[in-house]
Image (cartoon, rainbow, N blue to C red):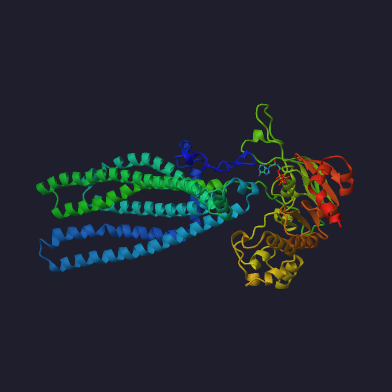
Length: 640
Ligand code: ATP
């Protein structure tokens, strides 16, 4: 089926490397099936989420016990009416018993309202806690995690899975408690009435539990599959309904094909929901048959007793009425087992995410570095991107001659940037330039060697503190769907209006912003699509200026802009780079000419180092690159 191939994982590899994290269970392969037993660890973890709400739970339990106890009383009223009030012609007793039945209904109803309100509060509380925990955990995840999982799928876990977990967890728990309470109260009532009949009634009980165990297993698998398919659907939608995805779809005329894939996905979701419902209904049907068996037995045996005079008609009717109160919770408890399996499947998915530990851990006792001189050193650094199969990873894996090894992104890279120096990275595509810029803010840790800031290994420092000293201006400027002011202040929320304006002036974007209808309060739309490339770059430069970091990482845009924009950006960049330690992926002639050191990269190695004049005078990669990329620019500048 088409869905199984291209769609299931359209970005099945990252840079030719299979995805990792093992979270992306594939639908078609799902018959490897999630675990079906209810394991203790999962149970303990689930219980921990309920603990903070124990007072509210006590209220819920009290309500449940109270309403279960009250529920057994109406049949006694009926027995009183049939056996006493009617035969003895006592109108007053008849009235009181009828009023008691109404009173019991009203009281039970009111208790029900209190119970449901409290349960909803607990449920929403757990939902809030889970969602927040998951979100905060995801914030600590590495860049690699987000590169390896589609955003829609991640959102699906925070949203759909957490919602499902909350619903099932509170619903199931309340179900268990209320059914156990009703069962206990009813059993007491039944035994007190007639123990022989009671024993007959409970003889059919084991029959309730045999089918539910089997159905529970199916339900757990279906529940996992449903959540996964939902996540797939959201992942797909997240990509295709994203501005860039829509653009791609329109340019390549894939509207119909995408709709087909979507409909297949959507059909799968519907089908799974139908299957879940059907499984539930079949179980219910089987259980209904068993629960009809009990009353039939009672009416047969009890009827014979009435004929013999050993039992009154009122008692038989009351007993039969109580029997429904016995079987309904029994039936529901049998299906609760099925629900528990569903709940465990959902919680398992959430715990899967919570259990991924961030690749870059903060040290237990980080060295403080509130200020930095901006002295950076890479010391024999080698690095491979994480892979699903460590045997294919280049730097730290046991080598098997038959396994094709992926070339490390960086190999034995050493260089130093003195405070305030400007270092430019040049090299062919895939040489490892971006990788170097990812390692400095510790988005990844080297497999070998070390990176130091002011002489301290980055792994000894506080991650947030290191990042607070580093600014990044990337090629692709991301702006939140919010006002320009909010986007700018994201860099430093406590900056004053004057500081923000000063940064924008320095980035040559202030005049443009004030010319907009809403000025700094202009909404920049999702991904800032309403601004041109050059304008977005200048906003990004202003943002970095506002942060005022000691170290700046700059990935210069490759796309050429018109002369005015280019001038404005270059001017803004010069202001930004001034006096800072900077690492620049250079695409502009002016940058390489002004760099204190140029690192020439090829295949993950630094193959040459020096200033422009030295490098260009030598035969080698730099010379070739310079001739290809910059010679004509230089010549054009020199031309009269
Ligand atoms: P470009 O100029 O095209 O941006 P680059 O010099 O910046 O290239 P890098 O992006 O650092 O090159 O990539 C170096 C190597 O690492 C490449 O072979 C690339 O395929 C690989 N690579 C980059 N990112 C990842 C990733 N997230 N997972 C796996 N491999 C990656």
